[in-house]
Length: 293
Figure 1: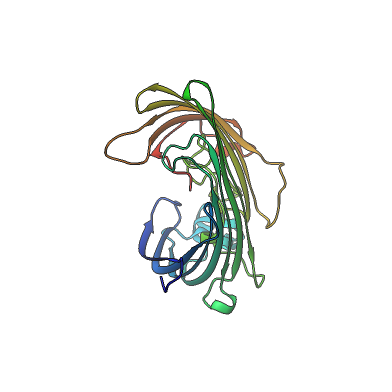
Figure 2 (figure 1 turned 90 degrees about the vertical axis):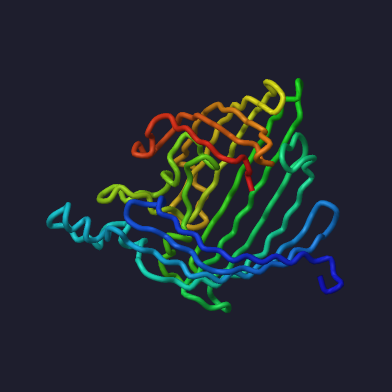
């Protein structure tokens, strides 16, 4: 690209998420353009500009729900009504990521590690209705052991903060739970919760989790997996407190099929630690394409 070692990327998207909450639906429509430049044989830097409209459509207004079901209480006191302000948001954001990978195989790594450190600024000098800064760091590490078994670590730390002191919109906030993070919990069911009224998780501003996984071959293209996941979601920005730690243990199967280049993962996990008892709903099955990031 332009006689430089640059990779140009573009994206047009329409995403409708009806499964995030019983109280709202989220729709993202927009476009993104990115440039990626190698810094060496294993590292690169990527810059991206993303412009999108985010619509929060409140099927059930949280404040109205509280007023109806809790006579005498003010629905505006619901945590969800404070975080979930329905309507349209124009989100304009610049992001830069540093990437490093020494993995021996992208689809089934046995050795090496991978790191992705990113900084995203929405609003400010690039305009829009959302003014936040997000810092994240993700990493993976693999060891090839006896009998072609593989031990892996996968984790992430992430923080979001407001640039101007306004409330951070719910679509910028952070959650855990589900097949890609803490597999013993339901999708997005870990995080600060509106426990007094709606019982909905409204997300936090700080997140961290670690997955430890051990896989062994059973037959060709089939591996057994044993794993444990641990993590936290804190309400405040830049909060690394570990007072509320969630964890699970589980097992599963990894299948390599001709129809997909990525392994299919079928997992079952049970919670071991759940400070929020509402998040402990017993064992969970998860089925997904195994791609960490």
